[in-house]
Image (cartoon, rainbow, N blue to C red; front, side, top):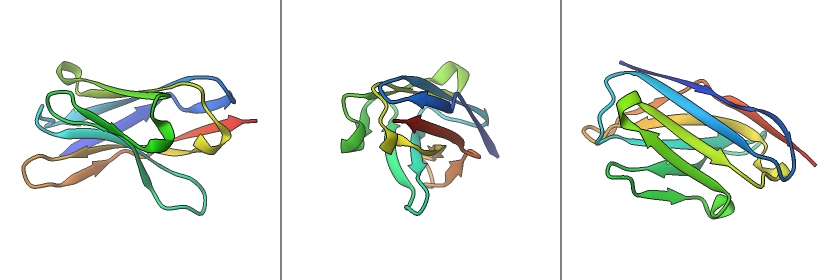
Length: 117
């Protein structure tokens, strides 16, 4: 079983920065994909960024050049550095682990990010 705990959310002014962290307990493998999703009120959950085994990444177009995802396999942790935040980045951010073998998804409980204009 895998448990994910996010931290680092909060309230920030537009143009500011936040760094989200997600610590995973249980069996996480370096082959698993780790990522961040977000869900704004009244909208569907969407991919923000993910990082694959070996370190390759992909990002939503809306965050390219502003957000950076990274992972520490030794500590089973994934990070999301968010710079130049905009009010439209306001959402609950969820950590995700997707098993390479079997495709099972695990989710954290979410952390609120609010960007004021």
